[in-house]
Image 1 (cartoon, helix red, strand yellow):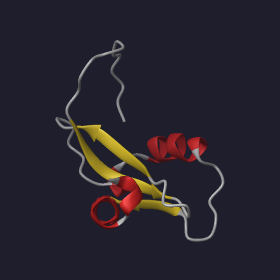
Image 2: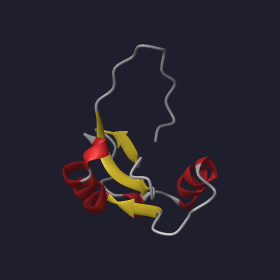
Image 3: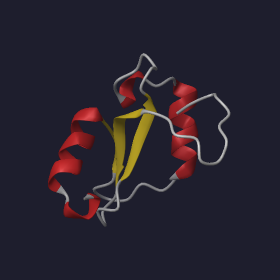
Image 4: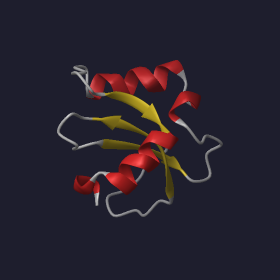
Length: 82
């Protein structure tokens, strides 16, 4: 999540702050710029959360938005993410 404008090819340091877990294990990770003072999905503003929910408006059984702890677990334990 950022308000900055970037050009194609720009490299930006980011940190994982959450995940949208999908039933097919094709999870979508939420990142923020490393310098941003936020470490978890729960810390996003309501507007930022709504912006993310518009990307994936349908949430099926076993799916949903989760914070950093669950994102770290998925990265380590769900083969498809590796």
